[in-house]
Image: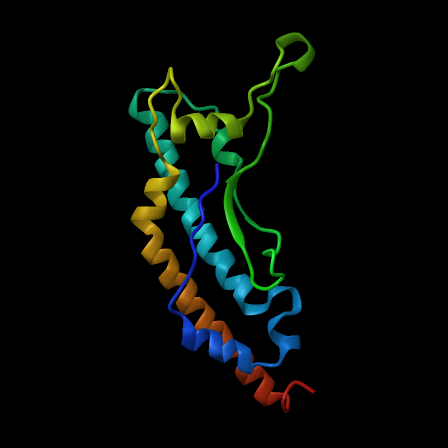
Amino acid sequence: MKMEMQLKGLDDVLATLKALPPEIVSKKGGPVKNALRRGARQLRDAAEANLREVIARDGGQSTGLLEKNLIASRGKPLSSGKGERYLVRVKRKAYPGRNPERDGKVPTVRKSAQLLEWGSSQQQATPWLRPAVSQHGAAVIETIRTDLLKRIDSTVKRIAKNGGGR
């Protein structure tokens, strides 16, 4: 289960980032990583609310394990080695009390999330992540943009105050 959201149209922000000293921007992700993390958490929270609604819609009972394993995490660098990635994903965790030797293939929370989102031949799809992206994507992008600009301004002021970062 993979969905990607790419930010485009932030040329002025990228130009400002490129103008900053690389040791400030690229150390451990810098302001870009932090802004993306904030946006990913916002999207995760929206997806979590949708997930609760989908489970409750048909009178279903939730153990809460799926919600607890819905996370926003930093992704591996892109193949080009440039850029930052944050993911909203479900951890692969087995449901407790299931023994693979006795029960065969043990169901995981990730598989449950996939079945809810995409359905199967025996279960109708009840999407929860895709609607979160379509409903809240623009707000998430705006959050990332404003947070990134705020962090860049703060970094520029800190560099200027310290005499160019030396």
